[in-house]
Length: 261
Image (cartoon, rainbow, N blue to C red):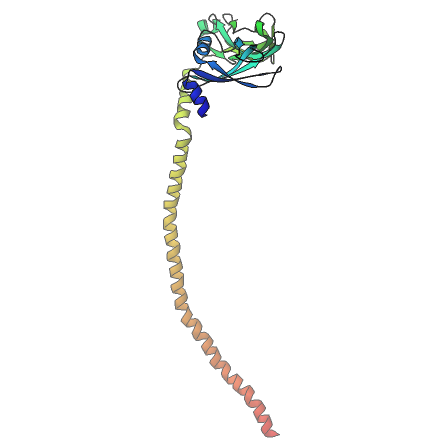
């Protein structure tokens, strides 16, 4: 990281070039030249001729595969170059632009929706377009332009499911629908959580006297047990007294028998 930071501070951008013809190789690119190239291009699908100093193959034909930007300043941090041959077909993501005003938007108040902003295009590097323009003036509400209906650039082919919609015109939303969505957003999950919490607190408050009543009931039962306990103790005591003579008689009987012998 320290080396890359020092490189950027000196007006250079770290880069890498890779492809089928050779192994990946680290490069340095002039920051000003790269930024000027990006700013004067419609998209970042750029085909460039690289002049690599002191290299065994000083001239390279490469496609700008990816450009990494700083999230706040937009400064170019890193560039990926995909080296290709002049007769090699490659696949790139090409942006889709619209021209004209859709009939459904102009007359019926519909909304033009971009389902796909970029589509895959395969072709030779020299034939790859910077963008694809689509006329949407004929679209009515409920109609769409699918991938198979996109005009194919000369020498290229569009890759993907032909039935996937790319651009469509949707019906306008009514005031009732917008009000319902706003109400749903206003209620949201937090409001429901608060309501559940309040109900729980109310249940706890209602349950508190019940707990007190239960404690009171336990105390009353304990007192009742204390009152009943003396009576219970007396009853067995009386029973023992009555049983005692019987036990005495049983003991006396054998004794009398011995005396008879």
